[in-house]
Image (cartoon, rainbow, N blue to C red; front, side, top):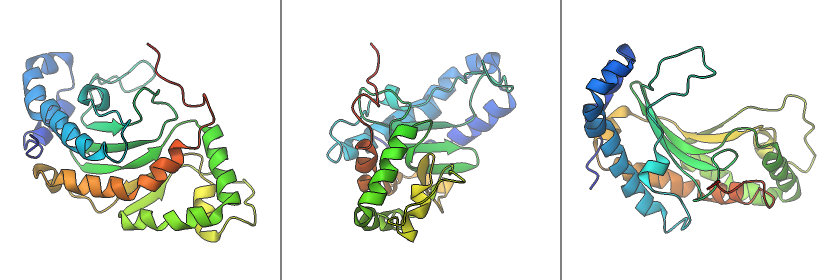
Length: 230
């Protein structure tokens, strides 16, 4: 049962940031399991069970949702082998990560963030979204207030010279111009993570953003979001 995140999580992240080496991790792996991974697994299970009635095909297995502590350094100048933060992501079960909408929750030494995103190169889906905004502006206007009600800000990269049709209302212009998009909870405090009530806080935000999750799920033409390879 999830009782809140462990108060040794942030000290572990800070130690790992300072001693970012395989030798340190080998010596402190059990500390990682006890104070970081296992509480995250409990959090994922508790939140996932709340989300399943809303999204029955959501992937909630902790080992599938939690990011790896190991970094992929092949194409990075930073060769530090480990992350000093972790996140979990809830997606539709059985789909590839790239291009699929997801809820996320992330903890680092200086930050806590969570929300809903459609990140990465997904021009086809965003073009479908633009056509839908232009064709059914009232539909978008009905759900846009959910972003503020959830205490989130809309962010993401934008097209600089993309023409905006006259049918797009001013309130939806920022959404129309996005290359990718995410809604991030603002005004969060790291102190929240030590209480089991963090599950309630995150669930309430995710539930308010559910119309956007369903909208994003419906953007992909058949075959655009691929199933995972066996």
